[in-house]
Amino acid sequence: MNRETDTIETINKSYYYRLALRCIFILIAGAILTGVFLYFSLYREPGSSYAESYSIISALRAELFYKSTYLYITTLLFIIIGITIICLLYSHRVAGPIYRLGVFARKVASGDLTEAVTLRQKDAIYPIAEDLNGIIAMYREIIEQLETKMKEVREMSSLADQPAGTAERDMIEKISKRVYEMNGILSRIKL
Image (tube, rainbow, N blue to C red; front, side, top):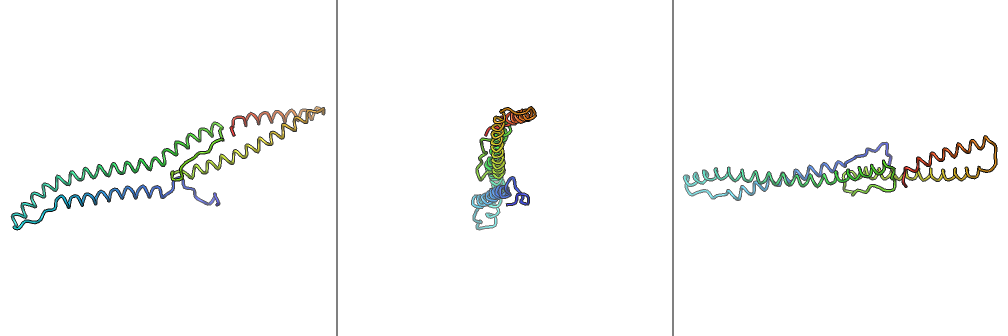
């Protein structure tokens, strides 16, 4: 996989589509339920005469207004509650992982490279967590190699304590000083 040419999505596009489809489903289901309720609650057989049918229609007009208002408010509440629940569930897939990434970033910023961030594969920003874990593993390996090289330099500098000329001693002192400085830098990072 060529990272330079591939586009990396922070949040998968299907996440937005699934959220929108579920909200649309709730709206359509609410409209269908409203229509079914109105049909069955207001259905009347027409009267045997014109006057009887007219009085049924007049009664239905008033009843239709009150029932449709009640049904509209009830359906609207169910739709709002449904969409709110779906949004909360979907935000759980974003907000929780972002919080965990923030905690992980603070640990890495303090020099702790011992842990990895763990997210669920269904979380919206799972690819970012995988990339961060790869970066941390790479830096951990580099630092381990650096520590190995430092150990070798320390061993060489201890062998150089044997009698030698002043120029060689000055060089050995400079190497020892640099190793000491590198050790101080590395001591801030935990492996």
